[in-house]
Image 1 (cartoon, helix red, strand yellow):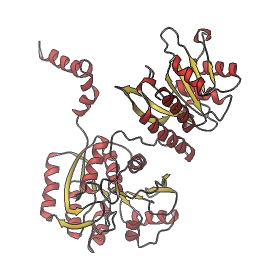
Image 2 (tube, rainbow, N blue to C red):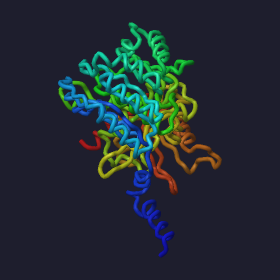
Image 3 (cartoon, one colour):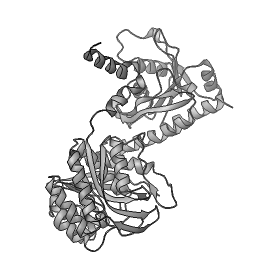
Image 4 (cartoon, rainbow, N blue to C red):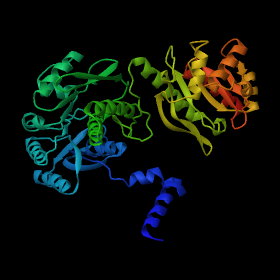
Length: 478
């Protein structure tokens, strides 16, 4: 066997013969973009260098670090700060640039004038403009900078920055402004822009409002990114994570607008799914299985996504694998007055069986379903309030349980489907509803050659559908 045949055999092994090493294995061997974080070490691993590395890893970016300070901290307080000697900081940066092609860099905790000076000089030498997170105070309220930091930051680093990501307290110190409303953020962003960075992000999380708006300013236009506040969450490391995600996305080739937009959505989910490993603030959840909100045009879209996301999480927690069809399960929720598939939120993938339990495979997004979305759209043409549905495995026993539970049932027969029907699910759903004279709780069919029989559970919203499927499951396992 010659060398070309050996290469072909290896390619086939990894892509066909061994599915466990197919795409994931091949992607892991690809050259990744490299990002650099110049920041402090957080011994509790919720913020600082540790949060940055987790954020880079989440994006599939290779993370490198230059540590500026070593802190002794936990989720409640910062006890001590040890400043790394500046010559060691400089050697860390020089050594990395000698070996790596670094696509993007962020700075976090720089502590004082000496560190700012050496970092700014090194980045200018290597012609890289950083994303600057002007870290001054920890989530606990403890100071992470001394009195020389602010002036040196404004003089040496901001004029050469690509982007600044500042929260309200940091923005107040950078601009000497009192900030209480969104218009104040816009004025402050403009003032920071005049210090030299190409882009300014001001985060509105410290403002008192149910909706949290961050804004991006590019010197010409303000862009607003708004998501609901997550109550009772004091997320340790959220600022570090946001700036690291932006840096990683920029390294991957995203535009500044898209990088900020995506990073905000990711951080929102990381906070939403955060947890408390210690006795103080929550930390962010950097799991790769997070559900990230899609880019939406209005609040109603987000509300639909959030209700479906919460319901899907609950469903997977109790659903036995025996209810999942061979084709997998989808769960959908439509916008009010939905007309097309793009108005219906669904799982881009399916809920599938894994051993004896259900497993969610895919993200929730609008336009992600064809078949189950068609069912809901057809139902809504009769009753606009019936906006949610999911499909489950067909069993005569399940239908009997549904009747016993008092659910209304409708059905259709695929053998009567016209030849030129564009959507079997739309046709079948309308057939069942027309026969019933109303939209039933359950619509089923017994299949056909090459077509699996399926039961569909319909409801006004995901919670309504959950109540019905929970009764079916509980009755099946008394």
